[in-house]
Length: 370
Image (tube, rainbow, N blue to C red; front, top):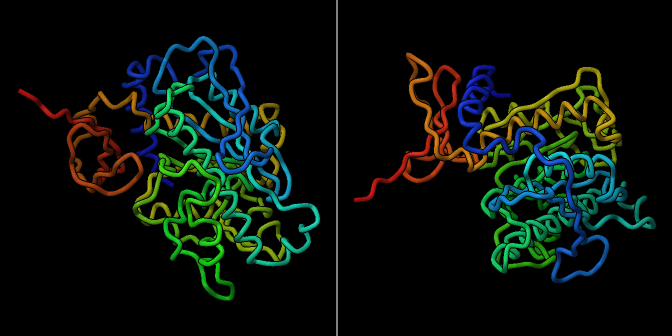
């Protein structure tokens, strides 16, 4: 997890630049939202490829950041109408985001026993979920290029979810190449290839599925080394007694026949190790289902506020403010872009400057023209 000084500096910078976002994205400034159900695939027409898009009523802003949120259910249950997904999407839409609760292909009831017993089938289902959500991401960019129905910023799209949805979001972000996947004891690279590669078979091809950050509520990753220095920022919330998606590392569902998942207790040290911007909110003694009741659970409300605070400094509406000389006697360690990748100083693009005292400075250096 980031040092406390980074948290304090991001909070300070966030306060200074709040006006640049016109009061949006930190608090609920809209009283109601509209939900629109769409089929996001141009290949499949079914419930598995639908999503509910939430937009704030009365909002005249365009270029709004997007969050796609993915339901849990162990990859064989759940739906975009789960209360946690609805509450998440409504809350962030009321803050000014465009949000979407996304369905994806699930294991059929007759195949659940086989799915829970075979690693190759488990890999396949996770990959199907990731490629479906990538098609949903591309849907927004395709729509932007063809009229922009929802008034989005196509360069600022986040993805997150609860439980299996968090697992999907994490793997969508951090499996960068088919070569990352194992070939023994099962050839999972071949499985991915048969699904259409990492971009998948669910359509909207020709548009990017890149994201700006990851939100994991009780999610985890199969292989920690998939989180590398070029990866996107991640914020996660989890109970440290979670054994369904193990807070550290353990078999999914606490079932030795299920693939290993490593939760917040291991993902964030890995992110620290490789320099990926990250933060985590831990619920001591809490198990897996704290999110299931949505806003009626105070832990879920804490997670929403924590996530909102993490995302806010990453938003483009903060680009125009440079904070100088906030800290003294400090040295620059590195510069990263909004996706957490190490880079060099650039003009006309937001960048984070990381210093040896743990502080972070967001800069936007304008290219002068004459």
